[in-house]
Structures are given as structure tokens and as C-alpha cells.
Amino acid sequence: MKFKLMLGALVCILITSKNYSQELTIPPKKYVDTVNIKKAVVRQNNDFPISDQANTKNWDLLEKYSDEFEANQLNEAIWYPNNPKWKGRPPTYFDGSNVKLENGELVVRVNQHQDVKLPEGFTHSTGFIKSKEKFLYGYFEAEAKLMDAPWVSGFWMTNVDKDWWTEIDICENAPGVEYNRNDLNSNIHVFRSPPEHGNVKEHFSRTKKYYFPEELQKDYHVWGLEWTPEVIRFYIDGILFREAENTHWHQPLEVNFNCESNKWFGALPDEERLDGEYHVKYFRVWKRK
Image (cartoon, rainbow, N blue to C red; front, side):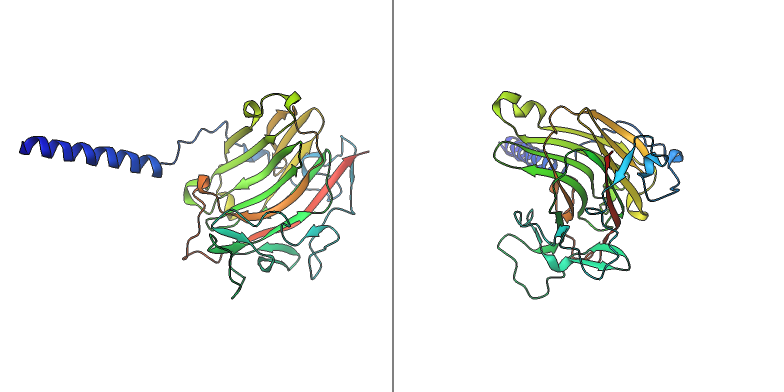
């Protein structure tokens, strides 16, 4: 009897341990490829995308919607200073106090909300800016230094309406989490589409992860997206690292810069690391002539 009790207790411990470990285990990485950083492009001019400095594709800079972030305050003709429709993914709340322009850069910080009481379910705050203009196709580029703290740094585009909810993630990375330091992520999502476009579950997410030989949070990098009716191309430092057929992304999209919590990245607040900053030197957008 004593042996059976001990055996039963051992089984319970093993089952409990297995379930607990499954909750904590991060899925194994599946890198598509390694980025060849020796192919990084040295910029010769600011007039054209870093991946096409000779302007072989006839790009025209849209100065009205581009931003060098050199003013004293955010240009609210271009940007919403916070997300007007999304308050944040718990436990991190979006608050405009976390967004500043300093030394010719956009800077996103954590927990600058002072004594403002956060809504229930939120323990920390960070920043979010969203473009007031929507864009259909073009080339989108930003030079940024990602946050070295456990939040996701984002440069992405989205559309949400009653028929379509789509997204292109140019940069969605959390190198402030040690496990993710060399992860280069790119995603294209369809969360909602009209019935005549098929089962949304079949094209919900086309996510790719690449290995970047240097830790992404240690330096500035140039993130680029070339978006046409036929193809979506992702670039870092002028290097083409992913190309995808454009099957569903034909809606005008807004541009977003933000930091956020995300449990899938292990990007959850750490009280010992509240000094992280996400820096963006510029945002530029081009259309073909």
C-alpha cells in the first residue's frame, strides 16, 4: 500500500511538472535563413530607399508624410500622439507621456505616466504613434535602435474595418529579451476578410523568423518594406531578406511605431529594467512615379 501511495504521488508530481514545464517552455526556433550582413548597403543619399540608392525603380519621396523627427514636438499633422483606438495589450498601457522628440529622434520610453492611474489590468505604460494618412503600396523605411528591455519594438502597418483587418509587420522584435537578441521577425497577417476571399484561417498568418548575426538591440538598423500589388519585400540595412507573394494585402494601411508587451516573445515587464528606450531617427515613404 505504501509503495502504491508513493508511486501515485510520483505520477502526480511528474504530470504536474510536465504541465508546468509546457506552460513555461518557449517553442524551439525555426530560422528560415541567416541574414548575410556583409551585404549591408552604405547609404549615398537620403533621396531614395537604402536598398535602391540608384533609384532603378523610379521612387518619389512623399515629403508631406515623411518625418525626420527634428522638431521640438511631434508633428500632429502626420501622427496621432497615441493610438486612438487601442489602449494596449495588458499589462502595458499606451500613454502619450512615453513619446518624445529629442536630439532629432523619436524616443519611446516606459512608465513616464507619473501619478496617472492606469486602467484595471495594466501595470506599466509605454508609447505609440500612428499615422493619420493611410497608404496603398510604396516603399516605407525607418532607421531605428530597438529597446534593450523586455518590450517589443514595432514598426508596422495595419488596416481595421468591417470587411478587412490586415497587417504587415516590418519590424516586430524584442531583442531586450536575451532569448530573442538575434531574432529578425517579419509577419503578414489577415485577421478578417470578406467571405468571398476564402477561409481566413487558411491565411491568418505568414510569419518568418531569420537569424541576424549581431544582437539587434546594440545598434541602429534601417528597416524597409517594398509593397506592390504583386509582392511584399522586407529589408534590413538594404539587404533583402524576405519576399512574399501579395495575395491579400490590397487595402490602404496606417503606419505605427510603438512598444508593447507580448507573452509570445517573453516580453513582459521587468521592474529592474524600466530604463529601456526605442529610438527612431526618421520615417520616409516613397511612391513610384
